Amino acid sequence: MFAGKKVIVIGERDGVASPAIAACVEAAGGEVVLMATECFV
Amino acid sequence: MDPHTQQTVIDAVDKHGRENLIVVLGTPSPEAAAIAAETVTTGDPTYAGPLAETRLGLIVYHILEEPIRAALDPAIYDQQVGLMAETLDAPAIAAAVAEARAAISGQGR
Image 1 (tube, rainbow over the protein chains, first blue to last red):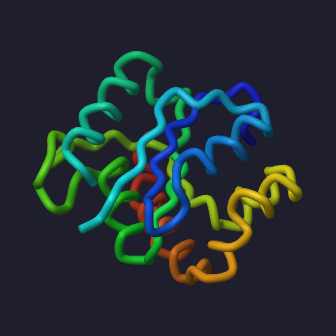
Image 2 (image 1 turned 45 degrees about the vertical axis):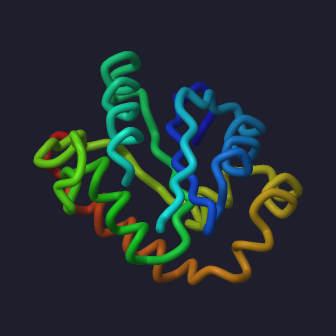
C-alpha cells in the first residue's frame, strides 16, 4: 500500500502524533513528504 | 485543520501531484477525523483556511483503520501507535474517514 508512495502525515498531539505515523509509513516503504502535528485547542 | 497546515498540503499537492499522494491522519476523535478528512477531500468545512471550497480529492486514511494497520509492520505499529489504538474509538474514527473517501469516489478524484 505504501511502497513507492508519497505520504502526507497529519498527526495530532492528543491522538497519534506525526512522528509515530511517519515511522510506521517509512518502515512500509512510503516516502513522507509532509509531516504536521496539529494541536487542537 | 490549522490554516498553515492547509497551505503546506496545497504546496505538497502542487509539488508532487495529487495522484501520487496518500494522506494519513492521527486525529483523536471521529469529529476531528471527519473535519480533517473532509478538508483534504472536498474542502475545509470550517472555512477557516485556504482549503475552503477547494476539492483536493486526496486519498485519506486514518492510522487506526484496519487496511492501514494491515499494511504496516506489526512490531513498529505496536511500538508507535499501540497505546492510542487501544484508547481511541477506532471504529467510529474509521467510519468518519471512510465517509470522506466515499464523498470523492466516482468523481474522478
